[in-house]
Image 1 (cartoon, helix red, strand yellow):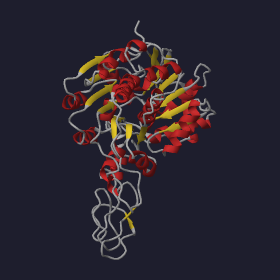
Image 2: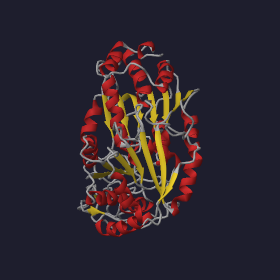
Image 3: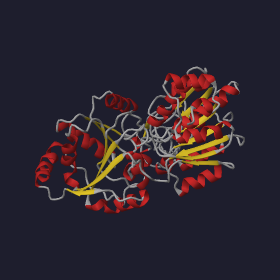
Amino acid sequence: MTQFTDLGLAKPILKALADKGYTQPTPIQAQAIPIVMKGRDLLGIAQTGTGKTAAFALPILHRLAEDRRPAPRRGFRCLVLSPTRELATQIADNFKAYAAHLGLSVATIFGGVKYGPQMRALAAGVDVVVATPGRLMDHLGEKSATLGGVEIFVLDEADQMLDLGFVVPIRKIASQLPKDRQNLFFSATMPGEIGKLAGELLKNPASVSITPQATTVERIDQSLIYIEAQRKRPLLAELLSDKAVERSIVFTRTKRGADRVAKYLTAAGIEAASIHGDKTQGQRERALAAFKAGEVKALVATDIAARGIDVNDISHVFNYELPNVPEAYVHRIGRTARKGKDGVAISFCSDDERSLLKDIEKATRQKIPSFDRRNDKALAAAAAVADKLAPAEKYVDPRKADPRNNVPSELRRKRNRNGGGQGKSAPGKGGQGGGQQAQGRGEGRNGGRGKGGGQGQGQGQGKAAAGGGDFRGPKRGVQQVETRWSPID
Protein backbone atom coordinates (compact mmCIF):
# COMPACT_ATOMS: atom_id res chain seq x y z
CA MET A 1 0.00 0.00 0.00
CA THR A 2 1.27 3.48 -0.90
CA GLN A 3 2.96 5.51 1.84
CA PHE A 4 3.87 9.21 1.85
CA THR A 5 7.51 8.11 1.84
CA ASP A 6 6.93 6.52 -1.58
CA LEU A 7 5.87 9.79 -3.24
CA GLY A 8 9.27 11.50 -3.32
CA LEU A 9 8.34 14.39 -1.03
CA ALA A 10 11.10 16.40 0.64
CA LYS A 11 12.30 15.11 4.02
CA PRO A 12 11.14 18.21 5.97
CA ILE A 13 7.62 17.63 4.63
CA LEU A 14 7.72 13.95 5.59
CA LYS A 15 8.85 14.98 9.07
CA ALA A 16 5.88 17.38 9.38
CA LEU A 17 3.52 14.61 8.26
CA ALA A 18 5.05 12.21 10.78
CA ASP A 19 4.61 14.82 13.51
CA LYS A 20 0.88 14.86 12.72
CA GLY A 21 0.73 11.06 12.58
CA TYR A 22 0.08 10.84 8.83
CA THR A 23 1.73 7.94 7.04
CA GLN A 24 -0.68 6.82 4.34
CA PRO A 25 -2.15 9.15 1.68
CA THR A 26 -5.82 9.16 0.73
CA PRO A 27 -6.72 8.11 -2.84
CA ILE A 28 -6.91 11.72 -4.09
CA GLN A 29 -3.53 12.45 -2.51
CA ALA A 30 -1.87 9.32 -3.88
CA GLN A 31 -2.99 10.14 -7.42
CA ALA A 32 -2.64 13.92 -7.43
CA ILE A 33 0.69 14.47 -5.64
CA PRO A 34 2.95 12.85 -8.30
CA ILE A 35 1.16 14.78 -11.08
CA VAL A 36 1.50 18.14 -9.34
CA MET A 37 5.15 17.50 -8.50
CA LYS A 38 5.84 17.10 -12.21
CA GLY A 39 4.43 20.58 -12.87
CA ARG A 40 1.37 19.51 -14.84
CA ASP A 41 -2.01 21.23 -14.66
CA LEU A 42 -4.57 19.18 -12.79
CA LEU A 43 -8.35 18.90 -12.55
CA GLY A 44 -9.21 17.01 -9.35
CA ILE A 45 -12.71 15.91 -8.35
CA ALA A 46 -13.29 14.37 -4.94
CA GLN A 47 -15.88 14.58 -2.20
CA THR A 48 -15.37 16.92 0.69
CA GLY A 49 -13.40 15.40 3.55
CA THR A 50 -11.23 13.21 1.31
CA GLY A 51 -8.01 15.22 1.76
CA LYS A 52 -8.01 17.57 -1.24
CA THR A 53 -6.06 20.26 0.62
CA ALA A 54 -3.04 18.05 1.26
CA ALA A 55 -3.32 16.76 -2.31
CA PHE A 56 -2.22 20.15 -3.60
CA ALA A 57 -0.47 21.65 -0.54
CA LEU A 58 2.17 18.93 -0.18
CA PRO A 59 3.47 18.93 -3.78
CA ILE A 60 3.32 22.74 -3.94
CA LEU A 61 5.49 23.05 -0.83
CA HIS A 62 7.86 20.45 -2.27
CA ARG A 63 8.24 22.46 -5.50
CA LEU A 64 8.74 25.76 -3.69
CA ALA A 65 11.34 24.22 -1.37
CA GLU A 66 13.23 22.57 -4.22
CA ASP A 67 13.44 25.85 -6.14
CA ARG A 68 13.95 28.43 -3.41
CA ARG A 69 13.78 32.04 -4.51
CA PRO A 70 12.48 35.20 -2.84
CA ALA A 71 8.92 36.19 -3.59
CA PRO A 72 8.55 39.59 -5.32
CA ARG A 73 7.63 42.61 -3.22
CA ARG A 74 3.86 42.70 -2.63
CA GLY A 75 3.72 39.40 -4.53
CA PHE A 76 3.64 35.65 -3.94
CA ARG A 77 4.78 32.48 -5.66
CA CYS A 78 1.61 30.46 -5.06
CA LEU A 79 -1.97 31.75 -5.01
CA VAL A 80 -4.83 29.65 -3.62
CA LEU A 81 -8.35 31.02 -4.10
CA SER A 82 -11.01 29.92 -1.63
CA PRO A 83 -14.74 30.80 -1.53
CA THR A 84 -15.03 31.56 2.20
CA ARG A 85 -13.02 33.01 5.07
CA GLU A 86 -13.28 29.83 7.13
CA LEU A 87 -12.03 27.64 4.33
CA ALA A 88 -9.19 30.07 3.56
CA THR A 89 -8.08 29.93 7.19
CA GLN A 90 -8.31 26.14 7.20
CA ILE A 91 -6.22 25.82 4.03
CA ALA A 92 -3.60 28.26 5.32
CA ASP A 93 -3.33 26.38 8.62
CA ASN A 94 -2.67 23.16 6.71
CA PHE A 95 0.02 24.85 4.61
CA LYS A 96 1.70 26.16 7.78
CA ALA A 97 1.60 22.75 9.44
CA TYR A 98 3.11 20.97 6.44
CA ALA A 99 5.75 23.72 6.01
CA ALA A 100 6.76 23.70 9.68
CA HIS A 101 10.33 22.60 8.87
CA LEU A 102 10.71 24.39 5.52
CA GLY A 103 10.89 28.06 6.50
CA LEU A 104 8.33 29.10 3.87
CA SER A 105 5.89 31.93 4.55
CA VAL A 106 2.08 31.67 4.32
CA ALA A 107 -0.49 34.51 4.50
CA THR A 108 -4.28 34.76 4.32
CA ILE A 109 -6.24 37.51 2.56
CA PHE A 110 -9.99 37.77 3.22
CA GLY A 111 -12.67 40.28 4.12
CA GLY A 112 -14.18 41.11 7.48
CA VAL A 113 -10.85 42.25 8.95
CA LYS A 114 -8.65 45.35 8.59
CA TYR A 115 -6.46 45.88 5.54
CA GLY A 116 -3.35 47.06 7.40
CA PRO A 117 -2.03 43.71 8.69
CA GLN A 118 -2.65 42.11 5.30
CA MET A 119 -0.78 44.90 3.49
CA ARG A 120 2.15 44.56 5.87
CA ALA A 121 2.21 40.79 5.40
CA LEU A 122 2.35 41.20 1.61
CA ALA A 123 4.86 44.05 1.56
CA ALA A 124 8.04 41.96 1.58
CA GLY A 125 6.59 39.12 -0.49
CA VAL A 126 5.07 35.78 0.58
CA ASP A 127 5.62 32.23 -0.65
CA VAL A 128 1.97 31.14 -0.39
CA VAL A 129 -1.15 33.33 -0.22
CA VAL A 130 -4.61 31.89 0.44
CA ALA A 131 -7.28 34.45 -0.48
CA THR A 132 -10.95 35.03 -1.12
CA PRO A 133 -11.61 36.65 -4.51
CA GLY A 134 -13.27 39.88 -3.32
CA ARG A 135 -10.60 41.00 -0.87
CA LEU A 136 -7.81 40.02 -3.25
CA MET A 137 -9.37 42.21 -5.93
CA ASP A 138 -9.38 45.09 -3.45
CA HIS A 139 -5.66 44.65 -2.79
CA LEU A 140 -4.93 44.46 -6.50
CA GLY A 141 -6.86 47.69 -7.04
CA GLU A 142 -4.91 49.40 -4.26
CA LYS A 143 -1.67 47.93 -5.70
CA SER A 144 -0.79 46.48 -2.32
CA ALA A 145 -0.65 43.10 -4.09
CA THR A 146 0.66 42.06 -7.49
CA LEU A 147 0.26 38.80 -9.41
CA GLY A 148 3.33 38.97 -11.64
CA GLY A 149 5.30 36.46 -9.57
CA VAL A 150 2.65 33.72 -9.29
CA GLU A 151 4.04 30.35 -10.38
CA ILE A 152 1.20 28.12 -9.14
CA PHE A 153 -2.51 29.01 -9.18
CA VAL A 154 -4.98 26.87 -7.22
CA LEU A 155 -8.76 27.19 -7.38
CA ASP A 156 -10.23 25.22 -4.49
CA GLU A 157 -13.93 24.31 -4.20
CA ALA A 158 -14.49 25.61 -7.71
CA ASP A 159 -18.18 24.70 -7.77
CA GLN A 160 -18.94 26.73 -4.66
CA MET A 161 -17.19 29.66 -6.34
CA LEU A 162 -19.85 29.35 -9.02
CA ASP A 163 -22.68 29.12 -6.47
CA LEU A 164 -21.49 32.30 -4.77
CA GLY A 165 -21.15 34.27 -7.99
CA PHE A 166 -17.35 34.47 -8.06
CA VAL A 167 -16.80 33.43 -11.68
CA VAL A 168 -16.34 37.01 -12.95
CA PRO A 169 -13.77 37.97 -10.26
CA ILE A 170 -11.90 34.71 -10.89
CA ARG A 171 -11.64 35.52 -14.58
CA LYS A 172 -10.38 39.03 -13.74
CA ILE A 173 -7.74 37.62 -11.41
CA ALA A 174 -6.69 34.96 -13.91
CA SER A 175 -6.27 37.62 -16.61
CA GLN A 176 -3.54 39.26 -14.50
CA LEU A 177 -1.61 36.06 -13.79
CA PRO A 178 1.55 35.17 -15.76
CA LYS A 179 0.83 32.92 -18.71
CA ASP A 180 3.62 30.55 -17.72
CA ARG A 181 2.16 29.01 -14.56
CA GLN A 182 0.79 25.77 -13.18
CA ASN A 183 -2.98 25.61 -12.65
CA LEU A 184 -4.75 23.29 -10.22
CA PHE A 185 -8.54 22.98 -9.95
CA PHE A 186 -10.05 21.01 -7.09
CA SER A 187 -13.73 20.53 -6.46
CA ALA A 188 -16.32 18.10 -5.13
CA THR A 189 -18.53 18.49 -8.21
CA MET A 190 -17.98 19.96 -11.65
CA PRO A 191 -20.97 21.90 -13.03
CA GLY A 192 -20.96 22.95 -16.67
CA GLU A 193 -19.93 26.56 -16.02
CA ILE A 194 -16.94 25.52 -13.92
CA GLY A 195 -16.01 22.95 -16.55
CA LYS A 196 -16.03 25.77 -19.09
CA LEU A 197 -13.82 27.91 -16.85
CA ALA A 198 -11.45 24.99 -16.35
CA GLY A 199 -11.23 24.60 -20.10
CA GLU A 200 -10.23 28.26 -20.42
CA LEU A 201 -7.53 28.23 -17.75
CA LEU A 202 -6.07 24.70 -17.67
CA LYS A 203 -3.48 23.63 -20.22
CA ASN A 204 -3.50 19.97 -21.18
CA PRO A 205 -4.53 18.97 -17.65
CA ALA A 206 -4.39 15.57 -16.04
CA SER A 207 -7.67 14.53 -14.44
CA VAL A 208 -8.18 12.76 -11.13
CA SER A 209 -11.72 11.74 -10.15
CA ILE A 210 -12.07 9.72 -6.99
CA THR A 211 -15.87 9.49 -6.85
CA PRO A 212 -18.65 10.15 -9.35
CA GLN A 213 -19.94 13.71 -9.32
CA ALA A 214 -22.50 14.58 -6.62
CA THR A 215 -22.39 11.23 -4.85
CA THR A 216 -22.62 11.07 -1.06
CA VAL A 217 -20.38 9.43 1.48
CA GLU A 218 -21.43 5.82 2.05
CA ARG A 219 -20.85 5.96 5.82
CA ILE A 220 -23.54 8.62 6.28
CA ASP A 221 -26.93 7.31 7.44
CA GLN A 222 -29.30 9.56 5.48
CA SER A 223 -32.99 10.05 6.18
CA LEU A 224 -35.76 12.51 5.29
CA ILE A 225 -38.70 13.69 7.37
CA TYR A 226 -41.80 15.20 5.77
CA ILE A 227 -43.01 17.98 8.05
CA GLU A 228 -45.00 21.21 7.86
CA ALA A 229 -42.75 24.26 7.54
CA GLN A 230 -44.09 25.90 10.72
CA ARG A 231 -43.37 22.74 12.76
CA LYS A 232 -39.73 22.31 11.81
CA ARG A 233 -38.34 24.07 14.87
CA PRO A 234 -40.02 21.92 17.52
CA LEU A 235 -39.11 18.81 15.51
CA LEU A 236 -35.48 19.96 15.42
CA ALA A 237 -35.47 20.59 19.17
CA GLU A 238 -36.94 17.13 19.74
CA LEU A 239 -34.23 15.46 17.66
CA LEU A 240 -31.40 17.50 19.21
CA SER A 241 -32.51 16.51 22.71
CA ASP A 242 -31.51 12.92 21.92
CA LYS A 243 -28.29 11.99 23.73
CA ALA A 244 -27.02 10.33 20.55
CA VAL A 245 -26.62 13.80 19.04
CA GLU A 246 -23.24 14.82 20.41
CA ARG A 247 -22.23 17.62 18.05
CA SER A 248 -24.33 18.79 15.10
CA ILE A 249 -24.59 21.35 12.32
CA VAL A 250 -28.00 22.66 11.30
CA PHE A 251 -28.24 24.17 7.82
CA THR A 252 -30.75 26.88 6.94
CA ARG A 253 -31.34 28.64 3.65
CA THR A 254 -31.07 32.23 4.93
CA LYS A 255 -29.14 34.19 7.52
CA ARG A 256 -32.27 35.40 9.27
CA GLY A 257 -33.49 31.85 9.46
CA ALA A 258 -30.20 30.75 11.05
CA ASP A 259 -30.50 33.41 13.75
CA ARG A 260 -34.13 32.57 14.49
CA VAL A 261 -33.49 28.83 14.72
CA ALA A 262 -30.50 29.39 17.04
CA LYS A 263 -32.59 31.74 19.20
CA TYR A 264 -35.39 29.18 19.45
CA LEU A 265 -33.03 26.33 20.32
CA THR A 266 -31.39 28.42 23.04
CA ALA A 267 -34.81 29.28 24.46
CA ALA A 268 -35.66 25.57 24.38
CA GLY A 269 -32.60 24.79 26.53
CA ILE A 270 -30.28 23.55 23.76
CA GLU A 271 -26.87 25.21 23.46
CA ALA A 272 -26.79 26.73 19.98
CA ALA A 273 -24.97 29.43 18.01
CA SER A 274 -25.39 30.75 14.49
CA ILE A 275 -22.75 31.49 11.86
CA HIS A 276 -23.31 33.21 8.53
CA GLY A 277 -22.02 35.96 6.26
CA ASP A 278 -23.57 38.88 8.14
CA LYS A 279 -21.62 37.99 11.27
CA THR A 280 -18.34 39.80 11.85
CA GLN A 281 -15.17 37.78 11.56
CA GLY A 282 -14.80 37.88 15.34
CA GLN A 283 -18.34 36.60 15.87
CA ARG A 284 -17.77 33.78 13.40
CA GLU A 285 -14.50 32.78 15.04
CA ARG A 286 -16.00 32.84 18.54
CA ALA A 287 -18.99 30.73 17.47
CA LEU A 288 -16.73 28.22 15.73
CA ALA A 289 -14.36 28.08 18.72
CA ALA A 290 -17.27 27.38 21.09
CA PHE A 291 -18.51 24.67 18.76
CA LYS A 292 -15.08 23.03 18.55
CA ALA A 293 -14.70 23.20 22.34
CA GLY A 294 -18.02 21.40 22.83
CA GLU A 295 -19.67 24.39 24.52
CA VAL A 296 -22.29 24.47 21.76
CA LYS A 297 -24.24 21.37 20.77
CA ALA A 298 -25.74 22.80 17.56
CA LEU A 299 -24.12 25.22 15.15
CA VAL A 300 -26.78 26.76 12.91
CA ALA A 301 -25.27 27.81 9.59
CA THR A 302 -26.00 28.91 6.06
CA ASP A 303 -24.25 27.29 3.12
CA ILE A 304 -21.25 29.54 3.65
CA ALA A 305 -20.20 26.98 6.27
CA ALA A 306 -20.86 23.89 4.17
CA ARG A 307 -17.20 23.55 3.23
CA GLY A 308 -15.45 25.95 5.57
CA ILE A 309 -15.93 24.07 8.82
CA ASP A 310 -13.41 21.35 9.53
CA VAL A 311 -14.45 20.04 12.93
CA ASN A 312 -13.87 16.47 14.01
CA ASP A 313 -16.55 14.24 15.49
CA ILE A 314 -19.65 15.94 14.08
CA SER A 315 -22.20 13.21 14.75
CA HIS A 316 -25.22 14.73 12.97
CA VAL A 317 -26.06 17.12 10.17
CA PHE A 318 -29.60 18.52 9.95
CA ASN A 319 -30.91 20.09 6.78
CA TYR A 320 -33.51 22.32 8.40
CA GLU A 321 -34.23 23.63 4.89
CA LEU A 322 -33.21 21.91 1.68
CA PRO A 323 -30.66 23.80 -0.41
CA ASN A 324 -31.58 25.50 -3.68
CA VAL A 325 -28.54 24.01 -5.41
CA PRO A 326 -28.69 20.17 -5.39
CA GLU A 327 -24.91 19.75 -5.16
CA ALA A 328 -24.91 21.75 -1.92
CA TYR A 329 -26.64 18.80 -0.26
CA VAL A 330 -23.50 16.72 -0.76
CA HIS A 331 -21.30 19.37 0.80
CA ARG A 332 -23.64 19.91 3.75
CA ILE A 333 -23.86 16.30 4.83
CA GLY A 334 -20.13 15.91 4.13
CA ARG A 335 -19.48 17.73 7.42
CA THR A 336 -20.11 14.42 9.19
CA ALA A 337 -18.55 10.96 8.63
CA ARG A 338 -15.12 12.51 8.17
CA LYS A 339 -11.80 10.71 8.48
CA GLY A 340 -13.33 7.26 8.27
CA LYS A 341 -16.03 7.76 10.90
CA ASP A 342 -19.78 7.22 10.60
CA GLY A 343 -22.36 10.00 10.65
CA VAL A 344 -26.06 10.79 10.43
CA ALA A 345 -27.76 13.28 8.09
CA ILE A 346 -31.43 14.14 8.63
CA SER A 347 -33.29 16.43 6.24
CA PHE A 348 -36.64 18.17 6.71
CA CYS A 349 -38.93 18.59 3.72
CA SER A 350 -42.08 20.71 3.65
CA ASP A 351 -44.57 20.61 0.79
CA ASP A 352 -43.03 23.64 -0.94
CA GLU A 353 -39.63 21.89 -1.00
CA ARG A 354 -40.71 18.78 -2.94
CA SER A 355 -39.14 20.08 -6.16
CA LEU A 356 -35.83 20.70 -4.35
CA LEU A 357 -35.91 17.15 -2.99
CA LYS A 358 -36.52 15.79 -6.46
CA ASP A 359 -33.49 17.70 -7.79
CA ILE A 360 -31.29 16.41 -4.93
CA GLU A 361 -32.26 12.79 -5.48
CA LYS A 362 -31.67 13.16 -9.19
CA ALA A 363 -28.23 14.72 -8.68
CA THR A 364 -27.14 12.15 -6.09
CA ARG A 365 -28.76 9.25 -7.92
CA GLN A 366 -30.43 7.89 -4.82
CA LYS A 367 -33.76 7.71 -3.03
CA ILE A 368 -33.45 9.05 0.51
CA PRO A 369 -35.38 6.94 3.07
CA SER A 370 -38.28 9.02 4.39
CA PHE A 371 -40.62 9.29 7.35
CA ASP A 372 -43.82 11.29 7.71
CA ARG A 373 -44.33 13.49 10.76
CA ARG A 374 -47.07 15.67 9.31
CA ASN A 375 -50.24 16.19 11.33
CA ASP A 376 -48.33 15.42 14.53
CA LYS A 377 -50.45 16.92 17.34
CA ALA A 378 -47.55 17.21 19.78
CA LEU A 379 -45.50 19.15 17.24
CA ALA A 380 -48.50 21.35 16.46
CA ALA A 381 -48.76 22.36 20.13
CA ALA A 382 -45.01 22.96 20.32
CA ALA A 383 -45.12 25.06 17.15
CA ALA A 384 -47.57 27.46 18.79
CA VAL A 385 -45.11 27.95 21.65
CA ALA A 386 -42.22 28.29 19.18
CA ASP A 387 -43.79 31.32 17.53
CA LYS A 388 -43.81 33.08 20.90
CA LEU A 389 -40.19 32.18 21.68
CA ALA A 390 -38.91 33.21 18.24
CA PRO A 391 -41.35 34.40 15.53
CA ALA A 392 -41.22 32.37 12.34
CA GLU A 393 -39.41 33.81 9.34
CA LYS A 394 -41.52 35.25 6.55
CA TYR A 395 -42.02 32.58 3.92
CA VAL A 396 -39.97 32.90 0.74
CA ASP A 397 -40.63 30.56 -2.16
CA PRO A 398 -37.36 28.56 -2.40
CA ARG A 399 -37.74 28.33 -6.17
CA LYS A 400 -37.58 32.12 -6.42
CA ALA A 401 -34.80 32.62 -3.87
CA ASP A 402 -31.33 33.64 -4.91
CA PRO A 403 -29.48 30.54 -6.19
CA ARG A 404 -26.35 31.56 -4.34
CA ASN A 405 -28.19 30.79 -1.09
CA ASN A 406 -26.14 32.96 1.19
CA VAL A 407 -26.88 36.30 -0.49
CA PRO A 408 -30.64 36.85 -0.68
CA SER A 409 -31.53 39.02 -3.66
CA GLU A 410 -33.10 41.70 -1.48
CA LEU A 411 -29.84 42.15 0.43
CA ARG A 412 -27.85 42.34 -2.78
CA ARG A 413 -30.12 45.06 -4.18
CA LYS A 414 -29.92 46.98 -0.93
CA ARG A 415 -26.15 46.82 -0.95
CA ASN A 416 -25.95 48.15 -4.51
CA ARG A 417 -28.49 50.87 -3.87
CA ASN A 418 -26.89 52.22 -0.73
CA GLY A 419 -23.30 51.53 -1.62
CA GLY A 420 -23.21 48.88 1.07
CA GLY A 421 -23.81 51.35 3.85
CA GLN A 422 -22.63 54.80 4.77
CA GLY A 423 -19.32 56.05 3.59
CA LYS A 424 -17.52 59.36 3.53
CA SER A 425 -16.53 61.26 0.44
CA ALA A 426 -12.88 62.07 -0.01
CA PRO A 427 -11.62 65.64 0.29
CA GLY A 428 -12.25 67.68 -2.82
CA LYS A 429 -9.40 68.74 -5.03
CA GLY A 430 -10.26 72.42 -4.92
CA GLY A 431 -13.65 72.68 -3.36
CA GLN A 432 -14.98 73.16 0.10
CA GLY A 433 -15.87 70.32 2.44
CA GLY A 434 -16.33 67.10 0.58
CA GLY A 435 -16.03 65.20 3.86
CA GLN A 436 -19.72 64.83 4.65
CA GLN A 437 -21.48 61.53 4.61
CA ALA A 438 -22.27 60.02 1.21
CA GLN A 439 -25.31 57.84 0.96
CA GLY A 440 -27.95 56.86 -1.56
CA ARG A 441 -28.24 56.14 -5.25
CA GLY A 442 -26.45 57.46 -8.29
CA GLU A 443 -23.67 60.00 -8.54
CA GLY A 444 -22.99 62.88 -6.18
CA ARG A 445 -23.23 66.20 -8.03
CA ASN A 446 -20.42 67.75 -6.04
CA GLY A 447 -19.10 64.78 -4.10
CA GLY A 448 -17.93 62.84 -7.13
CA ARG A 449 -19.04 59.55 -8.63
CA GLY A 450 -18.59 56.30 -6.70
CA LYS A 451 -19.06 53.02 -8.49
CA GLY A 452 -21.61 51.64 -6.05
CA GLY A 453 -21.30 54.64 -3.80
CA GLY A 454 -23.81 57.43 -3.32
CA GLN A 455 -24.47 61.17 -3.37
CA GLY A 456 -21.89 63.52 -1.89
CA GLN A 457 -23.22 66.40 0.16
CA GLY A 458 -20.18 68.69 0.06
CA GLN A 459 -18.44 70.53 -2.71
CA GLY A 460 -15.24 69.49 -4.40
CA GLN A 461 -14.25 66.65 -6.65
CA GLY A 462 -13.54 63.80 -4.24
CA LYS A 463 -14.95 60.37 -4.92
CA ALA A 464 -17.50 58.63 -2.74
CA ALA A 465 -16.40 55.49 -0.99
CA ALA A 466 -16.73 52.45 -3.20
CA GLY A 467 -19.57 50.08 -2.43
CA GLY A 468 -20.71 46.68 -3.64
CA GLY A 469 -19.31 45.64 -6.96
CA ASP A 470 -16.30 48.00 -7.01
CA PHE A 471 -13.08 46.01 -7.27
CA ARG A 472 -10.63 48.88 -7.32
CA GLY A 473 -9.79 48.50 -3.66
CA PRO A 474 -9.62 50.84 -0.69
CA LYS A 475 -8.79 54.50 -1.28
CA ARG A 476 -6.36 56.15 1.05
CA GLY A 477 -7.93 58.77 3.27
CA VAL A 478 -11.39 57.25 2.88
CA GLN A 479 -13.24 55.45 5.65
CA GLN A 480 -13.31 51.77 4.74
CA VAL A 481 -16.62 49.96 4.51
CA GLU A 482 -16.52 46.14 4.59
CA THR A 483 -19.13 45.61 1.88
CA ARG A 484 -17.37 44.84 -1.38
CA TRP A 485 -18.08 41.15 -1.25
CA SER A 486 -19.63 41.03 2.18
CA PRO A 487 -21.21 38.89 3.48
CA ILE A 488 -19.48 36.15 1.53
CA ASP A 489 -15.77 36.82 1.52
